[in-house]
Length: 81
Image 1 (cartoon, rainbow, N blue to C red):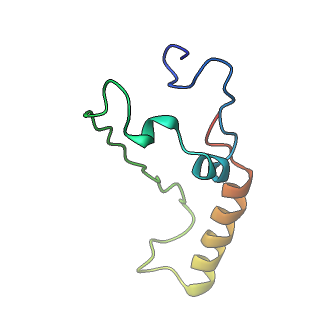
Image 2: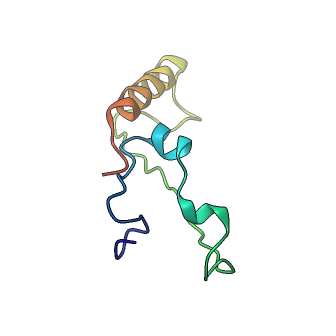
């Protein structure tokens, strides 16, 4: 195992979210010397949209624009570098 990344030496890191989900880490099996430990994580999506009102004040076309923009960017972003 390589120090710090939890992968066996030579194992390739996932390069997309889909690959991460399709090929989960070995530690999820629940085996090993520290199987009783639990790792808890949280994902936070920050809002950086200064030109668009919050959802309760935005018009439908503004909300659709935000959704389209988020979809487009999520397809090109690499979260697993």
